[in-house]
Image 1 (cartoon, rainbow, N blue to C red):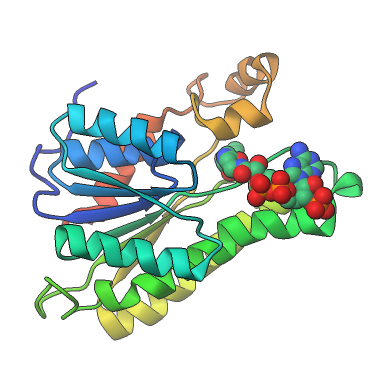
Image 2 (image 1 turned 90 degrees about the vertical axis):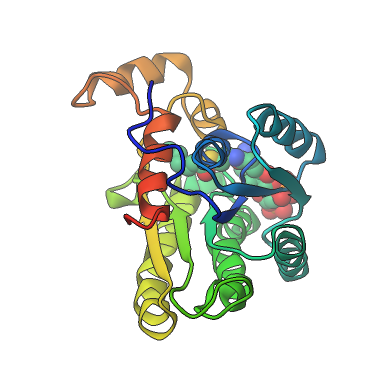
Length: 247
Ligand code: HXC
């Protein structure tokens, strides 16, 4: 599919994406890169990062992989410092890192619940908090005209209720909530735009592979207005709009 955006719409922007080595995060990284941005991807698994970076570079994208766990404040700080060292500034932070598994509430331990809250919600907050000084108007490489932008990826599970997803639903609800709070506080104080995208079921992602067997996927598409699941590309196009100056 052809992109509806000009190929230089993100030219000279620098983006850091957590969870950028796979799934929706990787597709956003690829499309941001194809539209002119320099890309840093953060993840826990070196081999996933390495292969993602080589794919990005094969498209001619300036990309680096930085190992780190969003649950660790020191990893967040180090990854942000490395991004600045490498590319000189940060314009766009995308929080796409997430953890997931199916578990009935009855069988889910408090630590299982906490683990997903830690990755999705606390991890998103930690990354935003550590990135603030770079994203602020007047931050490194930025000048005083405008601040950067944050994009948080959540889900729609918590809009109603979803079977065996009590932990993820709570975690993604918290992500949506902190998106709104940061948009208010940091938009007003620092000219940082904070937005969220809440994808429904998206084909070809580790999230959906973990959560829905094949039969469930085909049933799901029967309930979709367009009779098909969403695609990673759909989310990446929305992300480009929000991350660009048009957003
Ligand atoms: C019940 C489980 C469990 C399972 C882990 N736990 N897996 N409980 N069922 N299947 C519990 C453990 O028993 C433990 O609690 C606690 O969770 C921590 O488990 P660890 O294995 O030590 O954690 P860790 O190694 O950090 O792994 C984190 C993880 C894992 C979330 C459990 O799945 C992971 O790393 N996932 C990252 C990749 C991923 O999931 N990507 C998909 C995201 S997509 P106890 O009490 O025993 O100590 C996504 C989309 C959402 O989020 C929207 C979809 C529509």
